[in-house]
Length: 349
Image (cartoon, rainbow, N blue to C red):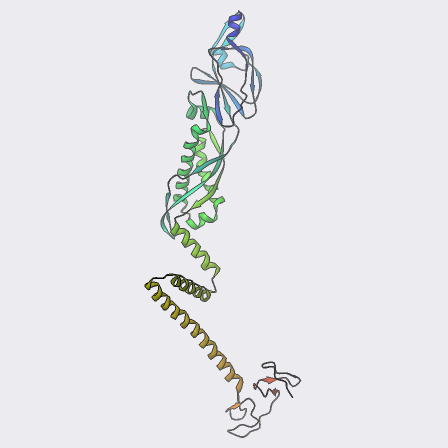
């Protein structure tokens, strides 16, 4: 009797001391399970009994005394009575249902996409995701099989490739532009997570989060994005932007010691100099027009042009009546009570 007692398990539990085990097979070592044995299933665990390759009974978190009442399937197909005690042979697996966080994904090769603005481009991306086992029976049938242990590294490669494939499909279906992706990581990640949900569910898993940390584009596209941002900031100041680009080009040409650089520098210098002179000429012309406008008045009688300081019209001789004083220095009209000219600062008598 003592020999047979030693061939039976009375306490069944899994003290998970790892951080990356998904399924743990309890080491039966040829022993049988005795009716009345104690089964302990901790939080974030599920215990699964398998008989002849088929799932027989499943237990959630809690402490159980195994009897014919809570093991109806095993008791009916695998139990053997000996000396008044029932015992049975079965495989026992513990499935870890906790959430596995901060799992990495990334594109090992660039993913091609067709963009409305930049044409066909290639991009790279990486980020993290989290998942958990929600259907242990489906997971054991589709992923686990008959192995004794399943760890994260056994399925992470498959899950990462699945997510990258879903990312490519999401880009193609949504026709989202590269610029929108670069500006909306959170929304883009939520779209990929929604599209990947059914794929994970078919494996007995649930994807609980998906994050895009970075999307990198080819250098030419990044440069175009930077240029577009600069133009947006400088909108309304295109003249200043043009002058800055000309000055930058002049500086680059000056640093180039080759003959071609010298010629280009001279040409750019002449262009910039011409632009500056043109701007100064325009300013002077505007000032001249303003001065003439201030100096010229019109006779109220005949309409002839007269000087601002004239007292009589040179054409018809009518006396010019003034309602305001005139600065003797610049000819600007000033208030009768003014002591200084508001235009030139001349003291008034």
